[in-house]
Amino acid sequence: MSSVIDYIIRPISAQDSAKNFKTGDSEFQPLKTYIQREAYSSVVSMVSQTYVCILRDEHGRDTNQIIGYITLTCSEVDLKGTYMLDDYPGVHRYSYLPAVKIARLAVDSRYRGYGIGPELVELATAISVEEIAPMIGCRFLVTDSKPKAIDFYYRNGFTFLDTEHNNQESSPVMFMDLLAASAVE
Image (cartoon, rainbow, N blue to C red):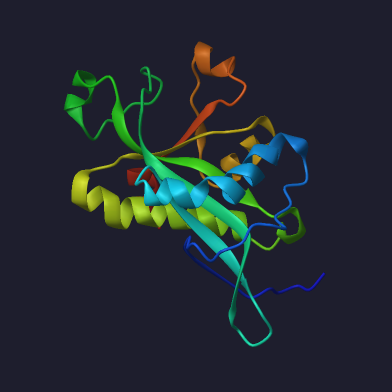
C-alpha cells in the first residue's frame, strides 16, 4: 500500500463512477448502493449535495473513480435540553435548531487510513460554517451514526445526543456545535 494517494474532492458529476466501490462490512452496503444508484439524482432533484473523493492517475488527471463521498442535506436537531447554548438566551423558544446533516459518508475500504473520512468531515464543517451559516444560519452538523462509525465521529469532533430515546436507536444522532468548532480553528 502506497503511503500517498492523489485525489481531489469536488461535487459529484454524471461522469463519476462508483462501479467498483467497496464498503467492506455488510453494515455499510446501503452506502455503496446509494452512491451507485441515487446520489447524483438526489443532487439533480435538489434534495442533497454529494461531494466525491476522486482518484487521480499518475499524471494528476481526474479518473472519475469515486473512492469516498459525503452527502449533505438540510436538517434540524432537537437537543431536548441536553446541550445548553449559553450564548443565545432565546434558544428556549425553539423546539428545533437548524443543522446540516451528514446523510451519508463512506470511504472505499481499499482507501481507508489515508485521512479521506476526516477530510470529508472537515469539508462539511467548512461548508456549514463558511457558506451556509452566514447566508441563512446554521448551528449544528448532525448525523445518524451507524454503531461501527460512532468512534470515527467522536474522533472528528462530534458529541453523542444523550437522551433516553437516542440511546436506544440503532443509528443514534451525533452532533457538532459549529460555533464551538469554528472558535477552535
